[in-house]
Structure formats: C-alpha cells, structure tokens
Image 1 (spheres, rainbow, N blue to C red):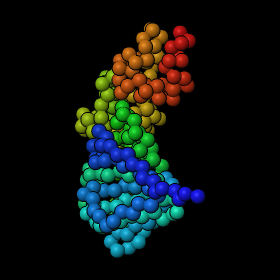
Image 2: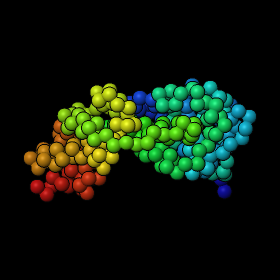
Image 3: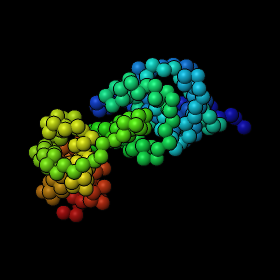
Image 4: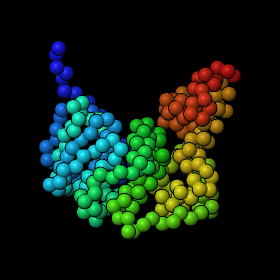
Length: 267
C-alpha cells in the first residue's frame, strides 16, 4: 500500500482590520518550522492535532483547547506532535493591542488555557473570512486584546463594566445615520470620544445586541423592503450596504430563515 504523501495546505491574506498584519491558515502533516522570529505577535489556535515548539529554550505544546501567543522578536520553531500533523489558524498582530512591555510575560506563559478566549479567537477568524464583516471583526479583536492583556498582566485587573446609556445612544444614532455606508469601530470611537472596548460594551449592555448585529439587522430590514418592491438580490445587496450578494445572503438567511431569492419568490 502506497504511503500517504505529506500534506501542505495554506491560505493567507491581509484583512482590512487595524492591528492585523496577516491571517494564516495551514494544515501540515510532516512539515517542521526551523527556529525563526516574527516582527508581529503570533496568536495561534490548533483545530486538529497538536504542535510542539521551543521558545526561549523551553519546550511547549499546543493542544486544541489552548490559545498560544508567541511574542515578537523571540526565536521559536514548530513541528507536528501527532502522527497526522496539525491544522492551525494564526493571526499576526502588530502592537495596536499588545505592547512590547508584555513580551516577557508572553515568554513565561505562551499557552493560555482559556475557553472564552479560545472561542473568541475562533469567532474572529470566522468574521475575518467574510468581506463586509469588518465591524464585527474589529469588535471581537478589541475584546481579545483586552483579555490577552488581563491574562499576561492579571495584577492590573480589568475595569468594572459600567452602564453608559448616553454613549450607547450616540453610537446607535451613528449607526442609524450610516446604515449603508457603515463605519469602522475606530472611526466610531473617535467620533464619540470613547475607548473601542467601552463603546462596544456600553452598546451591548444597553440594547442587548452588539453594534455589528444591530447594523446587520437594519440592513436586512431595508433589504426585505427592497425585495418586496421587486428589486433583485444583487441590486439589494449594493443598495443596503452589504459587500456583495453572498454577504447579503448569509446575514439575510441568519435573520429571516431563508435566502433573499426564496424570500422574493413568495412576493
């Protein structure tokens, strides 16, 4: 019986999200990384298999329930720790959310067992895979950065969330004004003079829904009206602020239960 050939599957892209240098997904069965360094922070989750690696002359591993954070400028390697290799998703992050003064703490504790953080990183990868979901991705990255900082420097603690209905209302007004054009989280934070994490938390606390969910709901509502007017899904996607028809379809089906095409057929 012929031996299986080593598998190397990779995809990489640079999203339009401040702070993210690169997204990298890979499936390797035998490939081993030599010692190397990155200029960016490496935020890694393993979906299948496991990776063993050396960092600062200490051996570490990445079982699927951990989040691994490798600091910039510190040499490390990596190789499969299971016979069938590993499948991983990686974010390379600049210093927007993680400063250089956290490098020492990351060297001491690169593997973080935190189910909430692990879930949030996975959700961020999902958002980054779809053009048009930049507001969601920015929001998720903001909270991931906050949680990573609290893990690396627990003595600093986290600010106690406080209600801020006036700030939430200002963001809602902004979103209502720019349903089609949309806006980035950094832009919104600058316009209302608030920290991005506090802004998202205040909005979610006040309305029980995240800003990106609110914006998508408003867009889908408009899409329903235009479909009932006889407009095609492609036209509707452009007119309601979705990136393209597939972007409209994904969110429309999530909120309405059917695709725009099937919805329009019942008119």
